[in-house]
Amino acid sequence: MSAATTRRLGEPLVVRIALITLALLFLALFLIVPVLSVFVQAFSEGPAAYFRAITDPATLAAIKLTLIAAAVSVPLNTLFGLAASWAIAKFDFFGKTLLLTLIDLPFTISPIISGLVFVVLFGAQGFFGPFLIAHDIRIIFAVPGIVLATTFVTFPFVARELIPLMQAQGNDEEEAALVLGASGWQTFFRITLPKIKWGLLYGVVLCASRAMGEFGAVSVVSGHVRGHTNTLPLHVEILYDEYDFVGAFAVASLLALLGLVTLIVKRVVEAEEKR
Amino acid sequence: MSGRNRHMPGFRLTLGFTIFYLLTLVLVPLSGLVFKTATLSWARFWEVIASERAIAAYRLSFGASLGAALLNVVFGFLVAWVLARYTFPGRRIVDAIVDLPFALPTAVAGIALTYVYSKHGWIGQYLEPMGIEVAFRPLGVVVALAFVGLPFVVRTVQPVLLDLDPEVEEAAACLGADRWQTFRRVILPRVVPALVTGFALAFARALGEYGSVVFISGNMPMRTEIAPLLIVGRLEQFDYAGATAIALAMLVVSFFLLVAINAAQAWTRRRTGEDPQ
Image 1 (cartoon, rainbow over the protein chains, first blue to last red):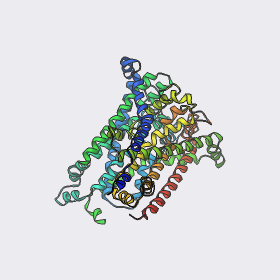
Image 2 (cartoon, rainbow over the protein chains, first blue to last red):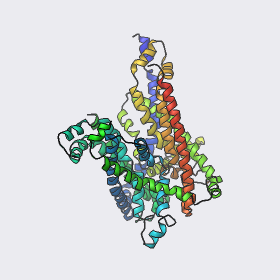
Image 3 (cartoon, each protein chain N blue to C red):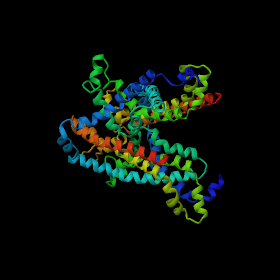
Image 4 (cartoon, each protein chain N blue to C red):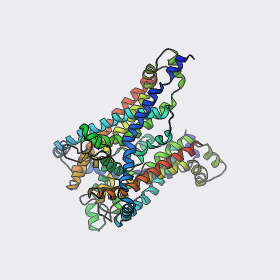
């Protein structure tokens, strides 16, 4: 290959440096600087103010409710993800494409609409509103509504991780186990589960991270009662609207850390899957 | 394929649970939107979804989503290119950071962008003397939506760039093409379908986005109010039917948009698929 041809293959060094700089500049302005600002603002009045903000009783109540919502939605959606991926990856049936599309539905719906759905069902003027009021059951503007909306919004995450993974892995080992006399559950726990564990881990972490960070849907059903129906992201909004910026950014920094942990888990899982 | 069905256990259990869960959690609740909207007369329905304030909100949501998705296509492609082709210090960290908008709760993104791009913020203070105001302007909505949509373009384009066979580019160079010609005639046609997909994903996500936008937009009716906020406004007046009417209008529009974009994508793929290897 002549020197002229080699030159034509890559970009000149100046162009490379210019492109890298431009890309990094864009990422800095849009991603890195905003995220850094969260931590800088959170500590702008010193660590004492920061710890006061995150140990405030209202913040602790918000943390508790956020964890409750995740504790219900993540196991349910994990169970669903395992069932859906088993059915879709191991069998062929009529309407499979439609089922896949429907599983993606909560991704394409605005979070506000996801919250609205439950207000229409269980709100005071909703379909079951009169019944719930008569029996003194609160769903909307109460904890059950928050749990429902969170589950709805995070419902595809585990399934979406597992379906392509199981499809790519095939059934050979499962079939071998079955032929050798293993039961269905034995096959699942001893063969399939170890094969999908890393994908499952990332799906669960992503689902949990989204469950704890969900804002729009939860905001519609919560009623914003401080110390009662306030999750962490809603608490950020309340503090921000009250011009308590240190408080808002301190609570936001907890959520930002959650996002960073999710990114790290993603990288670890990708590295493990490549091995 | 039917052999698969015979050997593997658990079909009825897993599919049964999947469908039951999907129905109770998603489909039955969603159908409530249709039933609630049906309590409105046609005239009232139209009055709600085509009010002047609603039209202004649709226009902002569409315009800003389009602007943000286009911005994502340009810079997402650049970022994907740099990550796939060049080595530089910190590349792996930069690669990981691209997923940040996907992992970061939207409310956090919202207050952070608002702070950074407001008049006295870290970036806003340099833009203001140039006459560029971002926060509490439609431009702020574009910035927030561009933040949210970036990973969609990068993560669809990057694998395609990594998959390109270097021999094709070598052949083009041997045949006398300069680098720009090779890029335009050989590389770009391969990447276009991924760019269209990335654009569609970013655009669809932007249309429904709420958390990162409400802080930076300022939510002024007729000026910086996005479509999902119309629903919140109706709900605050306990006008459930009005809220579901707007929700249905949004769902129908995004559905047709996705169908159109999918068709365009299939067409691009067919066209580039015919190119000789």
